Image (cartoon, rainbow, N blue to C red; front, side, top):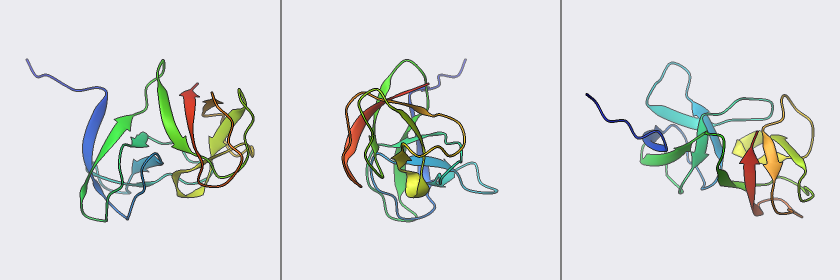
Amino acid sequence: MSQYNIGSKAFVAGEDLEAYRRVKLSAGSGSQVEYADAGEDFIGITAAKAAQGEHVTVDLKTRGRTFKVVALDAIAVGGDFYGADDGKISAVVNGSIQGKVLEASSADLEVVEGLLV
């Protein structure tokens, strides 16, 4: 019987990626990831920075745990967040709610803890 790690998985970076950003599978690939943009669903959060073509660990999207994520703008504690461009999160409604922040963000590129919903 095979063993699977359902918490994180290694992928190849389809573009330069920063840590703590939402990613999706690259079109036509099951092994490459790229940023999930505004309104797009995502498979997980990058655990570290990676250059295009390098391996990157992705903490797979699971409920019941928290993730460090990069904010695009100010989000109040307990506020809903949505997907933003370049794998960031935002308080601006765009698509479905993706989670709630457990600590406030006040500016672009601020790393906060979020809970997926």
